[in-house]
Structure formats: C-alpha cells, structure tokens
Image (cartoon, rainbow, N blue to C red):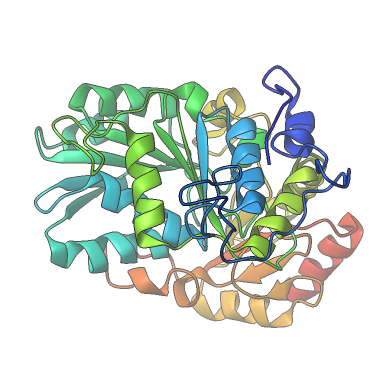
Length: 400
C-alpha cells in the first residue's frame, strides 16, 4: 500500500482519515483491506511485491496504520505493536543496556513501573522516580553518563500531573538521553510532544486511538533524525533511533496483527470528534464533583486550581477525558465504584463508554508499597460519550 498523496499540510482530522489510506489500487475500496495473511508470494528469490515477505516484518494493513500514526503525531515513522507495553518494551530494549539509568514519573502508570522495575531491573537497569512537574528535580535525578532515557507521562495516570515537555526535553538533550513521552491520555489531537522536543512518542492505542474497547494495541512514533543515547550504536551499526526500533520490532516480533491494525485505524478516523465530546463531558463532570459534599478533592487539568492548569492550557488544545477524585476513605471509594450503573466498573480507559475504577486495587496495584503508591481513596473516571445528564445523575446516586 503506497501513500501517493502528501497529507503533511492537511489538518488533523484529514490526516487521520487519509494518511496511508489511499483507495485500494485493485478494487478502488476506500477503506484499506485487512490483509489477513502470514506470508507473501515472491516473484523469484528476493522479488518482493511492495517490500512484503512475512507479516511479522511488514503487513500492508499495519503499514497503513503506522503511516497514519506518524502523520497525526508529526513524526517521521510509526511502529504498531500488540499492546502498549509491547511498544514500551521494544523501545527500552533499543535504548538501554545493563548498567544504564532511567528517570520516570513518581506517579507513572503501574504497568510501566512494573516493566522498568521488575523486568528491566534484574537486568541491571536502575531508575529514579521524580515529580516531573519539577524540572529542577528532573535535572537533579540525571546521572551523567548513565541516564539514557527520561520517561514522561503527561497527563500522568492516574493523578493527572502535567509536565513541561519542552523544558524536560532540554534537560534530556543536555544529558544525551532519549526523551520518550507517553501521549496516551492526551492523544495527538490534544498534544504534540514531537513538536515540543520529544524524540519518541508512546501510545497504548487500546485507549483513545482505538476508542471502542474492542482492540488491544500500542505504538511508537519517532521524530525525524532522532538518535540513540550518546555513545550507543544500534544493532544495524547506526546511531539512528528509527533504525534501532525497526530492527527490534522485527526481531522481537510483538507486532499488531492485521485485524487489530484495521480496528485501530478505524478508531483513529474519528479521534478528533470523539475527543471533543470526551473533553466537554469530562469538564462538566469535574465541575459537578467539585460542588459535591462527599468529594474531598477533584483532580482535572481543566480546573483552575489544578497546579498544572496553566501549563496544560499552553501545551494542550484541550484537557482530556480523564477525571480523578478523592473520597476521604478507601471504603467510600470502593462503595462509589460498586454503585455506578452508567459508569462501568472496569480497567482501561478511552472508549466511548464511561468507566470507573479504584486505581490502588486495580490498574496500579503493582506499585503498592513503592514510592509510586497511589492514595487508596482515589477514584479514576474515564468519561465517555454518553449524555451528560445521565453521567451526572449516575455519579449523584452513587455518591448519595
């Protein structure tokens, strides 16, 4: 599948709908077909049609998704994976070696912490968790010669902290480290980390990009000319981060299957309109919770008393669909989670339906007892696309 049209100058929604997705050359189908195939006929040894030989190495449906993801993130190349953690694992394998050090958020996603601390830790990778909104703390955590990556989530999961991507990028660049930004919560529609200095953007495409809770996937998008950490040469003999990621994606093989890639691509087409509704509903829910007598604290970047509000307003074009609030006790938090009917009690986020969860015992149970442990009275909402009145009424009866 060849993208013959240059969509670089087009608007976001146009890129999401068309980049990498020209009508099928054989039939004229306006939607890229699902190439549910493992291998491809060669026209003589090495005579590859379109460069495809085996679907782990490349598949036309996955190519369409990867080109579209690169286009909406403003990057040079995209890579699609079987899950967000598979994407993270591939990136970390590409940029780290035993003895290296990573700076991570002090409220990172539990799965990211588990991967870095419990999978890479025994292989000799050390990490320091810092409050990423404090750029001086990030700089102080850098270990010259050892820190090879700075890992940013903004907004963070689940406490919705906001980091200054451009400022952290300058710190990472000065240290010769790769800056990776997990853009899952914000999505490329609301935030463009590459334009702010990130070397590589990470996504769980399971969430907002897929958008319908029917597919698991992950992605990396690398900026043009991004290099491996200072002093590191990749397996292809170059210092190119793009080349290293391409090698590791193929060598490790945790790629997105054709049908998963197709579902994710379908979700991406409507990301812009969905995010507008997610943001509007979340803002209204947050304002409702602020005035509720049984809510001790509401955490949402769109609220003016959020410590990262002004930065988020500059760095993002909207405040997202995630809201967190505290109830004052673990028992009250668990009770609210058990009582909602429109909000479904479930892990994950970013689908069209609203979800509620208790991070301390669900998505972030893996950080219990660590410096990243989350408050046990915290409730996290993924605010969906239902009618606002129904969402507010549901929270009202659950809190009453």
